[in-house]
Length: 113
Image 1 (cartoon, rainbow, N blue to C red):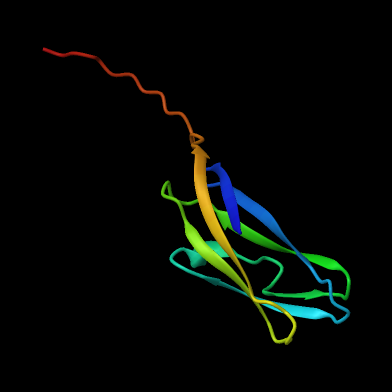
Image 2 (image 1 turned 60 degrees about the horizontal axis):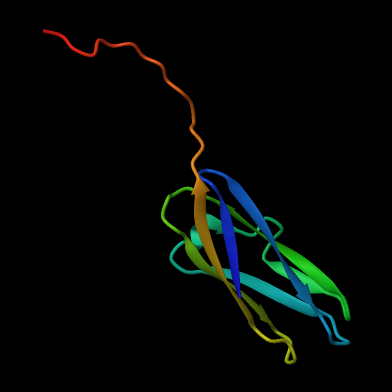
């Protein structure tokens, strides 16, 4: 699965990863961000999520678009439980537009002898 972070340059984008627990036992997942640009992504609510039996929970992933080039990382969710699968999500960014930081007006002669 791929989670895309799209927006303006320097914008902060938050995406939610929704996790479901179909089992009769609570699941505890530990999240790890790995890859070339993993340092640009963050987990503002912490890197651990507990999912009650037969319930669902969500985990926020935050990214601030700092560069024009696409950023890439992987969100890896591992559990100590025997019945829980390891989950991996590809994280990718794309700059959709650039907002000017400000407008500067200046006057200058076009031509001088």
